[in-house]
Amino acid sequence: MSLIAVFATYYGRALRWAVFLTPLKPQPSIRNLVSATVIGFTAITLFGRPGEFVRPYLIAKKEGVPVTSQFAAWMLERLFDLLMALLLFGFALTRVQEAGPNMEWILVFGGRIAWITGAGALLVLLSMRHFAEPLRHRLLAALHYLPQNRFTRIEKLVDACVQGVEATRSDAALLLVLLYSIAEWVLISACYWCLGQAFAGIISLSFIDVLVLMGFVSFGSVFQIPGVGGGIQVAAVLVLTELFRVRFELATDFAMLLWILTFVAIVPVGLFAAVKEGLDWHSLRRIGREVRE
Image (tube, rainbow, N blue to C red):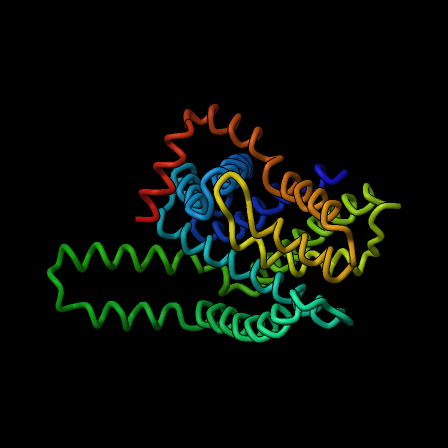
């Protein structure tokens, strides 16, 4: 059941991305978006955060839209996921009654960072929604002194960025993205819950406990070491041992299974999809490296 919930999240992400694409392409191919999504998340698992750039690049090429516009769409997706993670993390902080010494500094520091990051993410979203076009005009007006060929290249780049965030200007699209984001995190929580049930009798976690675990782990996932994860396992072990008093060995087993389900399980599917697309290990790595540079 955990795997079903996890695989469903990739389809949900493709549907959400389709909303971002609508201003540029009213009827994008969901099949292309799903393929690019599973390949992209495979690249993240194998290469770490540089693999993030594979997905928007593939979507742009498959759907025939500017690459820059899809990087803007990727930033939008990250902002919505960040806001959902912050809400969950804030909820987790309110549920912590007693923490060990290794968690105290995380609670204090994490609470402050959550407020600052949340305010910043909301500010960026509001800016994209209401000020993207005025900012575009001001930026291009300020760059008119450049040679015509260079100005034309920058103008195309800025226009593509604005097109990539165009979906935020529609109330209906914004609501749809929000609903898809909520559904995404409901599916993730279902994965955590099913895994918790697999440890029933050994680890006692209520549904609220699962949400608390998710809140902390969602921030640990930011630190991704290529091929071995890292942040997810550390965060899960800390929460399980410090908050729920789970034995270290058992917490480690749980954390490893969680990482395998949420990151590694998609790798065989992503590699198969990449081979069908004519991509290999070196191609994926090159895309992530070249786009980042």
